[in-house]
Length: 151
Image 1 (tube, helix red, strand yellow):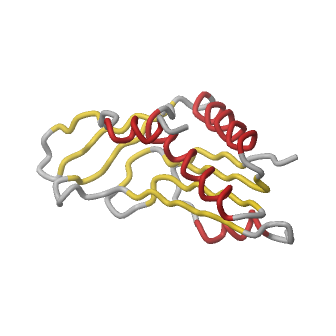
Image 2 (cartoon, rainbow, N blue to C red):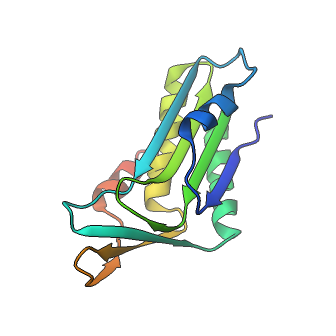
């Protein structure tokens, strides 16, 4: 039985180390897909994003969706790490790692998990602008909702 690794943390993560962790000592894995989401500068106007979450609830919901991915695809490993707090442009926000015997399951499950994280995960993002003016809360994008509709 595969037990997903779920972490919500303020600290940066090491994507390469997480990929090695999921495959260490395993000979049944033929594909690992990693996705790292980064904070953009939005054309130089963004000083930082501030991500908020409800501790406990966020981890439970990420564990639930990881379980859904495990029920849909034959996976040997799933890792989801999501940061919270103040994150500057260029810094990592989220990491998804999926491992499977075959590439299609690894790619599709990682895509599914990211579509979920973009549309339904219990995180809220507030923009902090370079000019110091109050930024707003980031709303879900129609394109993200449409992408999630595939699943």
